[in-house]
Length: 517
Ligand SMILES: *[C@@H]1O[C@H](CO)[C@@H](O)[C@H](O)[C@H]1NC(C)=O
Ligand SMILES: *[C@@H]1O[C@H](CO)[C@@H](O)[C@H](O)[C@H]1NC(C)=O
Ligand SMILES: *[C@@H]1O[C@H](CO)[C@@H](O)[C@H](O)[C@H]1NC(C)=O
Ligand SMILES: *[C@@H]1O[C@H](CO)[C@@H](O)[C@H](O)[C@H]1NC(C)=O
Ligand SMILES: *[C@@H]1O[C@H](CO)[C@@H](O)[C@H](O)[C@H]1NC(C)=O
Image (cartoon, protein in one colour):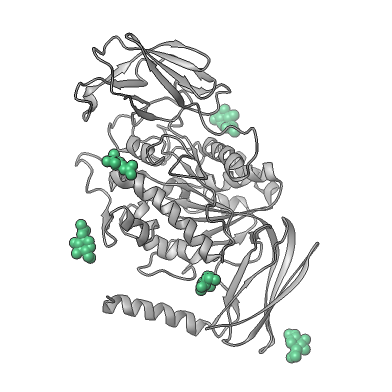
């Protein structure tokens, strides 16, 4: 049922589209210096014009000259280009023959488009990372990595074009990358793009659409929220489920209340017609105290829904299972226990502990639990070590999104767990590099099979480290333990110093929780 308010909103946005339709122009997110998705996919280009007018689009550049025609229907023209190989620059001209007017995009490259989403750790700029000056000084070497950023906007209805643009398509500059904190440009997005560029050697387009302090529900359409039993009219009051003494939100820029779907409506839905290669995501902090127990449903469901929607919106050009990378939560507030991060870390993997997994196909995860930053000037919830995060994400992208053989991107994970009276033997799926720890592993040996309270978990010391196994001492447990967990703490390790890594010491074993049946 339409209320008077939502009806007037719909009419309002319709009027905006129609009155603007007189003028020949591109949709908000096309611009000079942009990157369009390369072959084998086809890029989609659309805009506004006189209803009924004929539109001729021509693309000219070093290798291709190409023309296609279409008509303006209800104030909108829409074309799907032929596939174009990576490279450029190209000039794209759109001519409206009836009025003999034309518009043009110059310095257009073809490459891979990655969408970057999430909250403040994605918004965290290149200017805020450790050694930012070094990074900003080399920006000009990467002029084929192009950036675009959507403005912060909310809407109660799904919009078809962005209401605002924060950074129009640009070649990177130190000013754009190192702007005001939490404005532009995202460090994780940029570093991901530039590392990827260094392995692929063709243009990368980065589309940043993120907002600090936001829960996953704001970025999700109502469909996936309903699937997870999250009422589509609910409003998040982010701090209501947190203990009173918590000052959890003091470090969160722009913390506020969020209605479901408002950012999906204004900052993601408008982008659906763009052909993209994949997406990366850094979010979850805002769900540590809000619908936390549902995150194992809401996050995978959002990924599924974005994939379906981008596939449909691009007329099938964006892959139905496009690769989706994400950062597992790092740490926050060393001395405040139970901030909910350990549950969110687990739920980010749909409770598998690793990605991709059976529930989350074609995903990859950068573990960040070992990258704490107690002294971050932006609050410890915002670690400055985004290079490590982006580096791990890029390993995942190379292996999962680009199918590069022999790239390891996952830390060691238990393949088999064996018992005898005095020990647990954890066999890993790869060689490990491990250091002794007395409290990284904990067991539940309560007889009734549940350890609901943290005090029921017992730390078990590591007593032997093998090249691909670890023996834990079981002496404190009178019966067979019912569960084993690793790094199940909000802040389990010092920087780059968790107990277990891959043999090359690059990739940490992520936190896990195994039922032992
Ligand atoms: C269309 O415009 C161009 C330049 O704007 C002009 O050179 C050309 O003669 C015009 N053609 C027609 C048919 O009016
Ligand atoms: C960053 O700065 C630290 C010292 O503050 C230095 O040890 C390190 O080599 C620098 N470079 C990078 C890329 O981290
Ligand atoms: C996006 O594409 C779909 C399918 O081609 C179309 O129905 C829809 O109107 C497009 N949206 C815009 C804003 O052009
Ligand atoms: C869910 O939405 C309905 C309809 O708007 C509302 O009446 C109901 O109170 C909501 N329930 C919860 C738990 O928020
Ligand atoms: C998600 O986590 C909650 C709380 O830990 C659990 O009760 C539920 O069974 C899990 N759901 C799924 C789909 O894994």
